[in-house]
Image 1: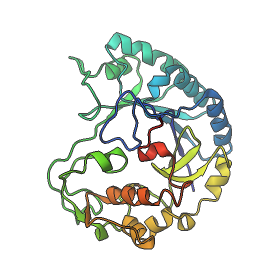
Image 2: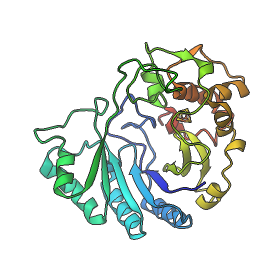
Image 3: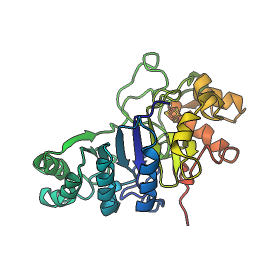
Length: 301
Ligand code: SF4
């Protein structure tokens, strides 16, 4: 594996509970990195010489703003390019947004990515656009907007196999696979013969959650860095022998169903919908590889 990007899920907690969220982010969700754990992550990351960029995501990373700022500062001092993904809930005005962003800019943040669409809570846009973006521009901070369009026009299933019949950018995994699929057109389960989004054989970026899980796709774990060193997980990654990735590589989510003789419906909205549903059935059998509870919608308490 030639890993260039580490995407750290700083927390599973979020200010919102969006229907399309892969990771089931929610105000009720738990799991947040401590500074000591982040320091351990950086120590292990330094042993993997190919890593160039470190992203901080969530959940909502700004809920732990002082920890986020310290983590960006630490990553920057170690020579990583840094990015932060946020829903911008904190940007109640440009002047106020400036107060949140300025410490991150001083810490060396390279880019702010703002999730802004109909799924992301209240619209904070003012006359000058979203205050977070306005403040980022004033601070000369590189920024971009991530927009997830809801289902729209019909698309050609042969041109883009594995994607939903209706367009838009929603991937039907995580909460979306349970909340958004009602009434959407479905395709036969046997047609989902590949993964349309992730490079499962040669991933160049991985997500790391606060429990130490290293995800090749959200909820599919290659190893746990609190149990085995990151460099050993990367060196030992063998997609063929991974019990979940192996079938996905051999024949997509349909192969996962076939190899484990899983129950299934006739049709699914997209490849991720079938993949996520099949994985839910396999969780008790593969507790380490299909983890943690947070990624499968289990909320503590
Ligand atoms: S098909 Fe499965 S592995 Fe591929 S992106 Fe969708 S959920 Fe992830």
